Length: 403
Image (cartoon, rainbow, N blue to C red; front, side, top):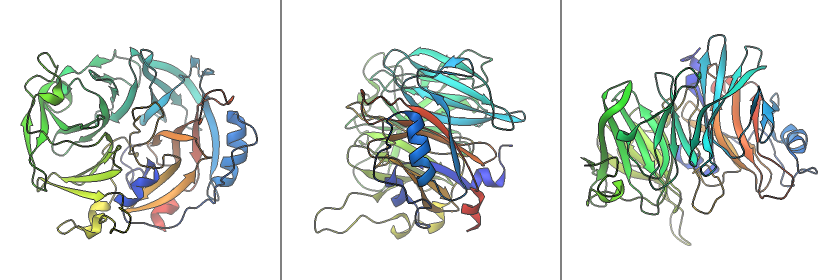
């Protein structure tokens, strides 16, 4: 099922800030609503808000609620990054858990008709797992959001034990995405002055050993890469080992397609674009200063063709965008207003769904066939009676491609 035209053409990204990284393709399908649900529980959210906020022809349902059993496993309390994988005639959705010391990854296995076959853990006992990415060989990379955080390579099918990939660096992981054409994994660092890294495995498909590079260079467009001497941070923190390393304000979610890496600076609201072919770095979007001009969009930057806004499947099968969590506790998408899900199709962005005030979206991912969208919704505050839920949206996503 992987690699179908629809799967490659439609992707979900959390946060309205991502609209600035792609040409705008239309108004939101659904009107949404500004009022919170009458009921504060998950059923009230689904029944009242999604029924009105979803575009015509789309239907939503809850597939898992935190603290309750889903397919035989208790669903975790802090769902974060997520991705989908093909599974014979069905598919699997995996979700990171961002709890401190109780983090990990849980999987839901679905049948062809969308019914839930089973649920199971694929990683336990980790710490604040937020960022994630699917590999081309169908494993799930789950990064810890701690100063000495590890990337774990997990088997979404639950057949093999998760493996820590120390060569990929111990640091506060913000976002990650694969570049299968060049054999890199890009990783952002969620620190106020974080770095941008790329991991070059010795053998593509085996992340056990390799070289971790950090982006270097003075402020400007031209950049270089330098190897990190000790990715396992045995002598000094990874981020401090290369003096000339470029710094970014809170590296978050990232997206890769056609030689261009886009990533978010959560602390300053910027979206960056790194062109791997020309080794040049640009700002796609920066918050406007009062009375000043807005930052240029992708198609307005000299030397960057408009077609670079076209979508691919570099982060997960049929889906892109890994949510991240800023310092301070609330989970966001690394894309600005994280109460919105946007879809990207054929180089244009379409606002898809607005959540009630305060609700955040994490882990959006399209099924391998491209006909179902999964993501988690987290309530605005504890004590409201609401719990995080993971939902499935079905509907005519193909219309976004044909419009």
